[in-house]
Length: 88
Image (cartoon, rainbow, N blue to C red; front, top):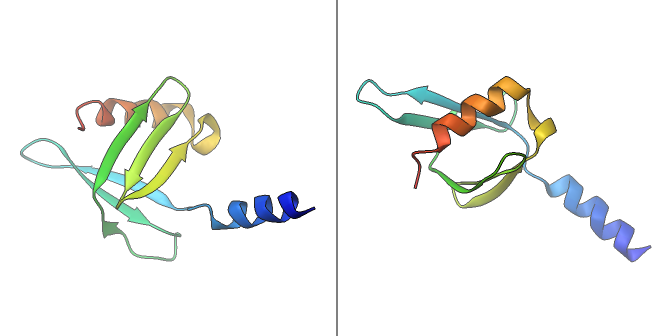
């Protein structure tokens, strides 16, 4: 029963929101995050720790995010992977 409570707590604490990339004129991408559609976009630093065929591991402002295949539609995740390739 305690394990169930821990899992529910972790699921509620899972970060949710939207990530947006805006191309720069000089090349590269400016990344922004918002917690919900009602919130304003805010610039963030983004680092890609893991880029696999099914799973994407990101650090947004130092916070760990995992993007699973059901995190977005296939085409959006494919475009995101292309943008993440040059990131350190």
